[in-house]
Amino acid sequence: METKDELALTQMRKSLELLASSPKKYGDETLKRFLIARSMDPEKAAKMFVQWQKWRAALVPNGFISESEVPDELEARKMFLQGLSKDQFPVLICKASKHFPAKDPIQLKKFVVYLLDKTIASSFRGREIGNEKIVAILDLQQISYKNFDVRGLITGFQFLQAYYPERLGKLYILHMPQIFVSVWRMVSRFLEKATLEKIMIVTNEEERKDFVEEVGEEVLPEDFGGRAKLVALQDVTLPPPLNDESSKME
Image 1 (tube, helix red, strand yellow):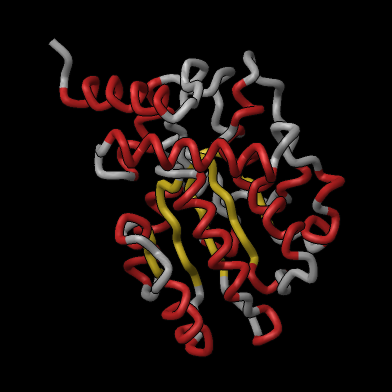
Image 2 (image 1 turned 90 degrees about the vertical axis):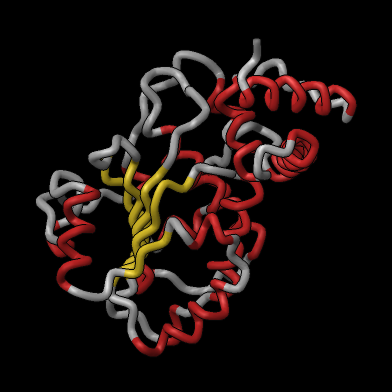
């Protein structure tokens, strides 16, 4: 007899067939993320999956975003990939003081895909399982008004919610200044409850200690209380996967 989750997966695959989608090349763990994002409703999950396929085909027709497609965003060297957390999730750090609102919105969208795809791929153990998650850290230290980018933040969160369901394990926000509070309130209105529950704004010493303990000193940079050096995202070289799942990142 099928379990409740197995039944939902079976029903989702049937719904996908009715929507003329081909889910056969995707494992259960991939489809399950879409189910969880839609409260285990097979029909809603199937529609979300089809929307993701169409979005992916339009924005990432080659299956990946090359560095040559996002030169302006890479030039700032604002994203860092630090290895795996204690829970074995890849740790991505954004230094907001190095970010400026994008002049090219299409390049910004491609950059979000580039950084999420590469971060997720860094957790593969040779093959993609489909349920890999990431730990993200948004460092707001030394930001000024010229770094404020409501559109960029909303784009990043919308991509996570709509096209990378259940990929976010935790997001830590560090050094939030008073001048950013109103911006965060505006952005948080666009976030689903499930996303908000994964966000921790570190505001005191006890929370900072918990943050270091949860992520791990081995991967955190020294100014965060760790022992590692910052490693720019584009400087990280990943081994080739054992299959072609990396061309179907979601």
